[in-house]
Image 1 (cartoon, rainbow, N blue to C red):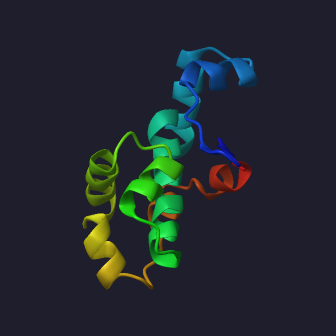
Image 2 (image 1 turned 135 degrees about the vertical axis):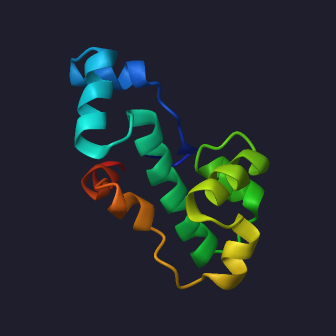
Length: 117
């Protein structure tokens, strides 16, 4: 969840409790609906929002990583490169007009992304 203090990663157990379902059921529902488990789905949303920050700000990679719930700039860089096919620095230099939301859109997660604050 995003707040004024940045992003707080919440455990899948907490999400399942809030939805009044078991963790296993939550995983099945997410996999059936989106093809991903809830942790990966939320990571895609975090990555898309981080890519928007790369495109729209001059914040450092460390600041963007911290604001979007990644444990380090290295972790953020690895996850972004695995999803978008390019590391953050190169993405910022060469793909400033790219669609940051394409992984979220492709996974059908836009409705979930819009529900998050």
